[in-house]
Amino acid sequence: MNNSNHFDSIAEVFNRMWYFSDDYKDFVIQHIINDLSLTPNDILADVGGGTGTFTSRLMDEIGLQKAYCIEPSSTMCDEASKLKNITSLCSDAHGFLAQHIPFTKILLKEVIYHIPKTELYWKNVYGAMPHGGKLLIITRPQKIAFPFFAAAKEAFARNQPPYKLIESQLRKCGFEVATIQRSHTFTLPKESWYEMLRHRFMSDLSIFSDKEIEAGIVEIEQIYPEETINIIDNLIFITATKK
Image (cartoon, rainbow, N blue to C red; front, side, top):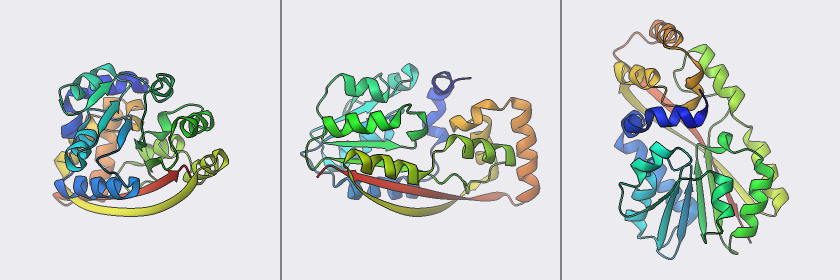
């Protein structure tokens, strides 16, 4: 299953699968606002914005001039189009830039591994962005702290580019780069976590069959026998500013 088809298949349940907690969403939203220095004068491009949940929330909290949710999955984009305060565009990262739509700030939340030819992409972003514009990449270290089964952790590590490589590429294009690592821990009922795994809430899980997912859940159950499970999310926030 490729990534586009994967996200098409989970579009209707995506928001529920990625719910986590209100505290978690507040944590991420506040850091996005601060790191991007968002103001009402900004035009935000949320690349890989999925169903537009974060795009819409940022629009509401800041009162942005304009907010685009750019999403290559047509079914995910259809979900985003139901949110009337944002503009949804069915496009990939490179395709959006090719449309020459003005923006001042750009967000790439947990999508960097889906973008091919990243060096070319950063170069084109730099050229399209006004002076003082900012790019925020939210990613994770290759060694994920999620309570995944071993094979899922290995799959995640294979797909995740080292953040130092991203920093190097951005600096090469002329960006001023700052990186902060932040962690948030929350607790879920174990069955909720297992439901997320069964729905393959992350694209890295799309390679596993139902049988392999169930075997993985048995593996996790042996490590976490309690009724609830702690989810530690270690996030890396990379801010690139065009000076």
